[in-house]
Length: 109
Image 1 (cartoon, rainbow, N blue to C red):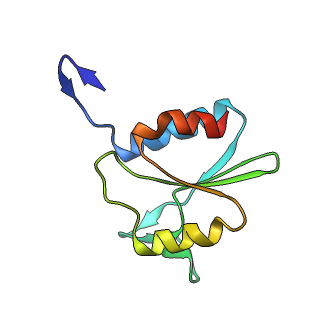
Image 2 (cartoon, rainbow, N blue to C red):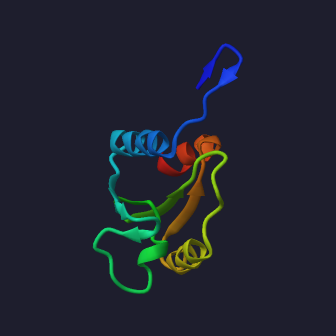
């Protein structure tokens, strides 16, 4: 968001809401797994839990996993990259930042 010449970066939670609002408008079902602590998904067990992407989206026969990052945020962790790599064998996977909005529109529309 810009106010005059000052640019206010969008928080990751605001970005996630923007993505999920769009997804709902376009008929996608979605799930976000909340986190307890820094990288431990709430109630998750197993070898993939700590790297599971922020969003799971389903529409028809399409399955999309998206890791969301703030514009200036850290890159995906090594574990996140490994999990996304495994998921990419069976589904669409993305790492999205607010500047990726044109790609997000293309994927979800």
